[in-house]
Image 1 (cartoon, rainbow, N blue to C red):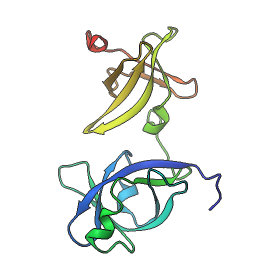
Image 2 (cartoon, helix red, strand yellow):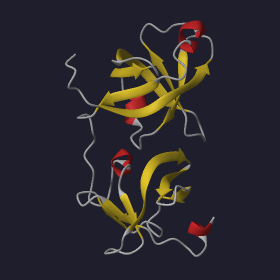
Image 3 (tube, one colour):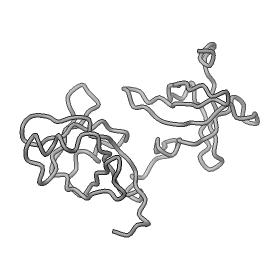
Image 4 (cartoon, rainbow, N blue to C red):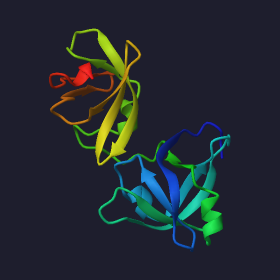
Length: 177
């Protein structure tokens, strides 16, 4: 595989399910088909330079939870599955579903400046995303503080990807925490 391939982390292996090699994936993608539809995926360990190609055979979402359970070809027992816990679940960066107007790939938000007024100075930048039922933006403030802000239209009414910033209209006290 050429080294110029760019990758998207769409989840993380967080545990095993049962005795037959099924893996629990905590998704960082709003596209469930990445965990349900068979086909090639990649796993990358903390110290690995190149991702390892794997083949997703089947997947399902755990009822009432955001976790997915997937089965990868060749991972047929609990021991083999346990060896993969902690690895990132990847797809190629060009494997992005088309979006409608007003929709965003959440990973594209990382690095955006955060402003309180459209022409104002940045108060911080989006440093990470947390998928916990509702998406949360982790914002690293100019003063070094890190704050979590719900990614909902009432609080983040404008996202300007091409200009590199988003507008934050926090309720009173949110930024004082």
